[in-house]
Amino acid sequence: MGIEELLKVIAQEKKIAMGLKEVKKDLKMMKLIIYSKDLKKDEVDSIMSKDAKLLVYDGSPYQLGRALGRNHPVKVVGLKNLSERVELELKKVS
Image 1 (cartoon, rainbow, N blue to C red):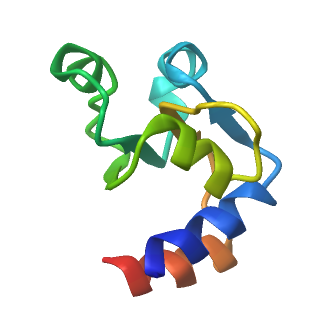
Image 2: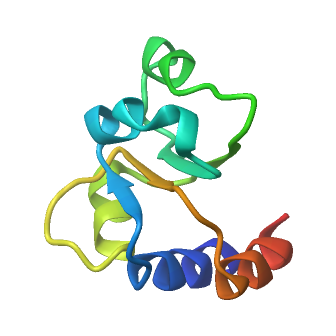
């Protein structure tokens, strides 16, 4: 249940990037990246960052999108800033 709560908090954040293209565009600024378990290995390699913590969401892109309050699939979501609420939920997941 921990990652679901984290995703609810992330959905309320202002500085998030959704989708592989958006996350890759701002990769150097990302602090946290969550990706669907269905992401291909080469796609995972393309979002690797020494500065960002990576978490795998154990669900499909559609399920990740729904967890973020969207009605469409989301392969990857990235956060540029970690608010106190996000950090608190992140500690519960880690």
